[in-house]
Amino acid sequence: MFLAGVVCSDCHNPHSGNLKMEGNGVCAQCHNAGDYDTPDHHHHPRNSAGAQCVSCHMPEASFMRIDNRREHSFMVPRPDVSKASGSPDVCLACHTDQDRAWSMDTVGSWYPDLYQPDTWHHVQQRNLSEVLAYLADEGELAIRRATLLEQHGDALVARHMSVVARLAQSDHAVIRESAYRVLRHGETGRVRNLAEQGLADDSLAVRLAAFESMVWSGSLPDSERWAGVKREYERYVDMQSDLPAGSVLKARYLMAGDYVYKAEQQLKRALAKDRGYVPAAILLTDILRSGDRNLEAVRAIDQTLEHSPDEPQLIHLRGLIRIRLQDYPAALADLERAYELTPGQWLFGYRYAVALFQLDQKDRARQVTQALLQRYPDNAQLRALMNHL
Image (cartoon, rainbow, N blue to C red):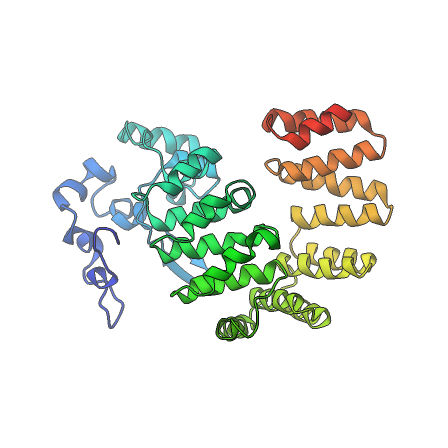
């Protein structure tokens, strides 16, 4: 809609926020009602709920349990993508007695060519070489290129730093912001010079992303040269600090300045507000582990898991800590559970297999590694492990 020049006030009264017309009339301002407001298109009885454009193209969801809002991406329903991604199927919101297979068959019979074009979901499943081509394509949407850049940020910083550096010079601020944000995945020495370039960007969002990547890497920029950006970031963090996520940002900033005790208090404050907030628990655990307070770290994870059960990152982290505590049966149980919960995360499986190997359970280690190699045949670490087994 945005690319077509549509703005909020085309549909809504800018003062009241109410729709300018009733029902499908608001859509028919641009879309020919003779083509779209007809059973030949929507396949539902006229004037029924299913005949409303918004029912399929703007489904309603509840946000924060109190605010019912309609989806504003205006997407064409794709039951096949809903099934592949595990996302809600708009058809089943009304047809509660049916399943995903029914949705796919029904919509496919209405529009035989619907499932042919790739969607944004399909783009996100592409391999890294295809992702590189997409990122370089100026004809693709900037917001999607930026999103894809962040989704593959770890691999891009590790293997294609020149691509990240080029995208950091993009004409689109949203792409530059993402490019500087992914620098946090790199080693300080490799990314510091590029990150400092972002501190001079015209866009505040880009400057904050570059500064924050330096914070994450534990390498703050020169306080005199970049005093203005430092003040901007501190204002930004203070504005966010009443939320758990903001407390985590502030804790990272404090840790970068070596104020570890204050950072710990910030994280405990975040967990007091949201006892199941995983990012706060992970960072708090890092602090506790670095001080050899491993039993406290396990307790912190246990308390968070009470509110966020089956969170694989926390279970995996607890397994690693229990290895240090030499509680091997519990450690293996945690590492196995995290591996089972995230079959697409090769590193969890790899560490589980290494632990099995080190604890002389080679047969099980071999089984896990073979299963991982079937999914990741080119992974050098998995192949090296298999050679030892």
